[in-house]
Image 1 (spheres, rainbow, N blue to C red):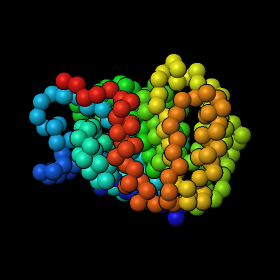
Image 2: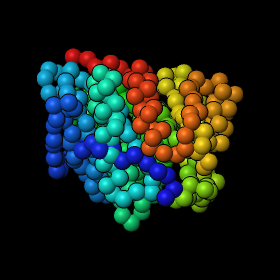
Image 3: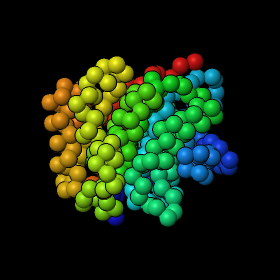
Length: 277
């Protein structure tokens, strides 16, 4: 497997079919789908609504969470640890975890039609169905492993849509399924556009015009992706781009992501608009 990943144990909401559950300790979990023009079919997603959602008229920020790849079509079903972390923090927010692959392609790298579906279509649907803060100030894009790559690239391509981007044990150029080499997209131009490194020279000016929090971390024992994270940190620092980078003990594993989820979710919420009535 290219990237170990935590599948969100959220269920998801929006679109055709909706299944909902609730508990006394957590808010509502929804499983739903939308009709994606970009993908030419269904895009499933999971949504977690905080306990406070059921009463009042408060609008909430949204954390969009991208899972790792390769994955089956149900890979998005695994955000329970995020919902639990938010509850422990006492920081109400909506979490949305979209599907990142469909058969027969288990590793689309969040590129092409997937970018449009997730960065454009999904927020429109989520904003239409839930009490969200309906602009970039209320949106964070966070991902694990391949989802970290997808989050960083989609945010850099769509700075007008997200105020926060975080990559947890991710990488910054598309890779082949086992994560050990670069994925060739067929042309130098396509490869460049799919690399976050390409955007660094102009990023200081871009995030000054549209303030964006950029954060990422990696485990010190992550043999595949540690070095590129260190490289990306050096590049951003040299270019004068504000960001937060951390190197933590551990490898490419769930234990690392679960341990640091509360702190990094809090960091994301510190940089989006607060819930408002």
